[in-house]
Image (cartoon, rainbow, N blue to C red):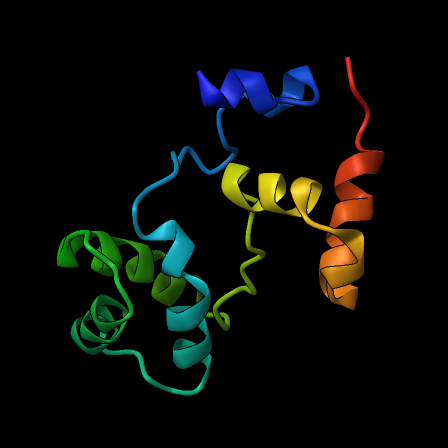
Length: 116
């Protein structure tokens, strides 16, 4: 339901091009991608490192994601963090004077999105 509520365009409702749905590992991907590009390509070690950061998913999910990175033969792509409902609510309800420059920019982008 959330996907339909947050879709800005009909294209946002289409399945991902790579056929993947979101998973529990997605919010943690910036860290293992950074470590991968630093040379750490051991999926078990990367699993342990993100588990220490709060990841509660399976070792297999991490391994499956990293297999795709390994098969590409390229550096791991940069992962852009998605704006969560909680973060968007915080930005909208915060006193603008208390927001840092990055938060102010994210708020402006959020408010500039087209509405139906």
